[in-house]
Length: 359
Image 1: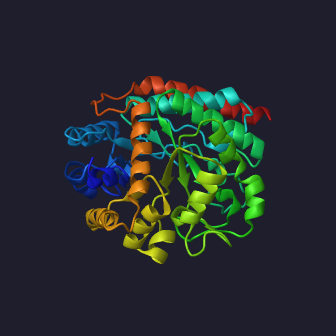
Image 2: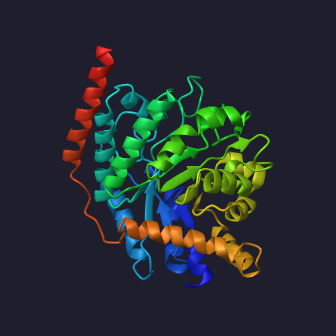
Image 3: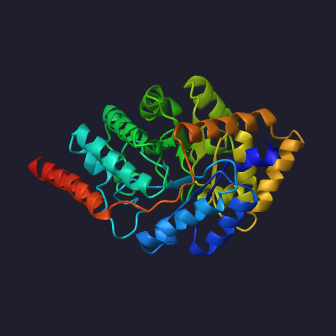
């Protein structure tokens, strides 16, 4: 495998707007990127969604490795599925039932819906601890404010996705619940990492012990630890915390690098370079004019020895091992039975509502 092909597998490119679909397809054909992230503004309905996914797969047919087709599908506020689908209740509403079997079922139906739609990677579940500040960006995306409950519910949901052969990317390490700001807009800071370590890291530690295979690392500055960079761009943090202290051997995915907390402070190009230098396996970034040039700059830096070839090879191996484990392929899909999926989601939602009214 050439350096270009190995580096390309590390790019997970988001389709920020419909106009970028053609350009992302070009990156698939020309460069052989590792995967694509789709969003709800990429399609008007389920038919368009399936057509888009099949077009992406078709573009990749001459490349050696199948695509990651990724999505943020949590339910509640974070719902990327088309209008035909009933939206499943938020993580906090599910967690409030204290019914772990129901959470497993929620993860299961989500996984089947995604898998049958050609999606093989889900940026879920959230393993952050709920913060009851009404303005907190995580809010009801978290299962609970109770650490042990987040561990239990999060791992159950993670395993439900895995059991249906959808890659679960747990997030947002080291814990957005320890912050007060929204990293989509401003760079959050963890002021006391000792407190964070005792509480907010616990669900991630437990998930790793229970077989977590992909972790999203957040744009969170850790005072006295990550220096000028957030965790997502800090080599010291990624290596010391995830790889050495937690002995994590799986895939590390950056949170999306187009967030204002990153672009305003570090810029588009510097952030891409630093994400590679820091040791992330997959660099997640919405398409922008210049992303292809940044790809070739990374390849050049590897050739010059400014980015270690070994670290590229290590990341490449982790990515390919994950794709092979989940038996990813670029077979075209027909989609799922919407009525059947909706019936199951409605059953789960009704049980959540019943639990709420009984309590």
